[in-house]
Image (cartoon, rainbow, N blue to C red; front, side, top):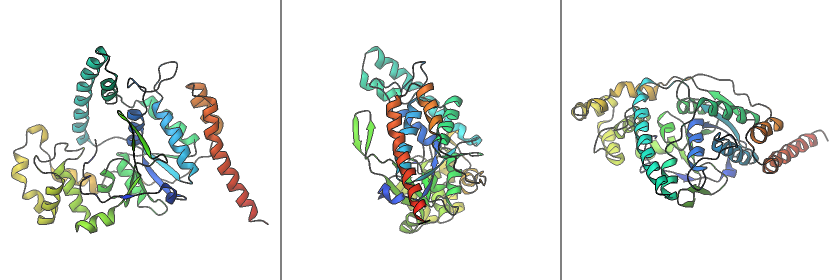
Length: 345
C-alpha cells in the first residue's frame, strides 16, 4: 500500500534521457506488482501462457527494462526478504481487501460487467515463489543485477542508494524517502502513457530529492519518520485518526523531537482499538535502523539465448517481437564496441 504523503512531497518532472550512465536501485516487489495489476486483458485477467501460467510480470520486466537499458541506464533489482513481524498488520489489511475484491469480481463476472471485472481482478493477484524466481532469472539474463535483501527490499534499496556510484531508488511508494533514500524516482518508463482501467493516461516520470524536501519544509529525517507514523505506514496502517499529511507536518514542526511529538499524542494513541495501537519507538527504529546488508554489485552478462528460452520456449511469447526488442540492445552493444575500438587508433 505504501506511505501516502503525496500532498506535501515536492516533485519535479524527469527526462529519462538525463539518467543515461546512472545506476538505479529498483524496489522489485513494488515494480512486479505494478506489472501484475496493469498488464491485463480486457476482462481483467492477467496475461497467461498456454498452460495457464501468469506472464504479465515477465512481459513488464522484458519490455520496460529493454527500453531503460537502451537509454544507457544500469539497474539493480532489490527483492524483499523476511519482513518485520509488524508487517503482519498490513498483510491482514491486504487480505481483507482481496477477499472483498473477490466477492465484487464474482458479482461482476456473473453480470458480465467487463469494466468492474477488470477493476477488481487487479486486487486479487499475488506473487508466488515461482514467479519471483523466474523474474530473477529473466532479470539476470537481461544483464540486470539482482539483490536478495535480508528484510525489506525498499529499505535495502535506500541503503544501497546512499553508496557511491548509485544514483537513486525506483519505486512508486514514498517509503524509500523515509528509509533515507537521497533520490526517489517514480513512474520510471520511457513511454509517457500508463494503462489504467479506463484506458491510457499521460504519466510523466518524477524525481524527488530528499534533501530538497526536508529543506523546503524545514524538517529533518527523524521528523519525516515521525510524520509517516502519524499518517500511517505498513507497520501501523491506520496511523492516528483525523491526522492527515498537512496536519502531521504542522505537528512535527511544532514539537520537534520524536519524543515530544508522540508524547503530545499519547492520549490519542491510547484511545485506538487494540488492533490499531502501536509502539512508535519500535516503528521508528524500523525506519531509522532497518536490517540491511552490504553487497558487492556485479552485473551479469547479457544472455540473449536465455531470454528467448524463458520467454519464447517456456511461455510462448512471440519470437519475432522478442527478437525486435533484443536488436535494440545489440545495436547499443555494437556502438559501444566501436567506440572502444576507436581508442586504439
